[in-house]
Image (cartoon, rainbow, N blue to C red; front, side, top):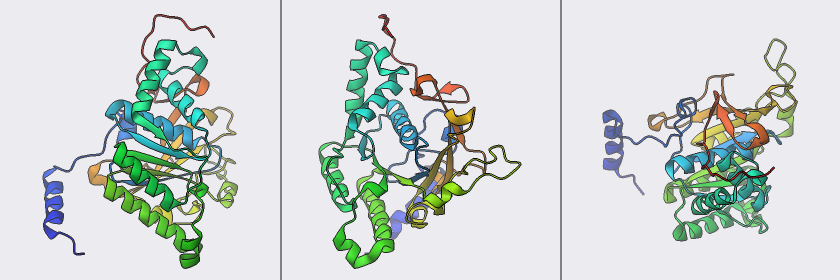
Length: 304
């Protein structure tokens, strides 16, 4: 099939005249200048194990929902559905679940049910069967974004493996993820793990975090560099979990932004977006400002 030349030319004209619609913002300048929610984007997220990648991702997802009414489909095999729901409720209220009033609790659940659907992770999927299910759900419930957490939890399709082998299998999977995004106008966020070798590389003498593991590089994804090659945007989430004071601070490194015309750009080296966890791990703040608005007020005091 040949591309429609007129459509491409029109896109270039729109760039020239500033008519290209930018990705959705969060209203936090430090984040918005680097990261945007864009429909049809294939985003790959990388990080070491146990740095809180899923927590940060869920918080950002909820922040986009609160500001822009973004709707999300979640497949997370490493987290129970009640854990995901609890985290979203606590993020909305900025309080632990046992300190949320009954009124607020019910209101939060209504919002979350309107904007989030969770796929039962007790069923096993390969990437094609999961995308097939995602297409079916899209027809019934029009969501804007999807999280797959993590990629290596998807079982390998033996037929495709026998035809392509391991390296080409992942390349085919990422290609089909991209096609899914474009065909269904869904922003797909794919959470990935770094290989174990990456964790052994430490910051050198003279660095602020000397002796601590460095943020993984794009090539450190389990499966290799094909993930960053196929991604529209590529993010690294890192946390210095053994640092005496900064262990509560999550760092987001934006390594790749394919289309800067629609907003966003890579963060400077060693100058990531820094999100500090607020007490009880019920949210984050950037430069002292909470990303998600203050919770709904309720006159009733909830006992500890």
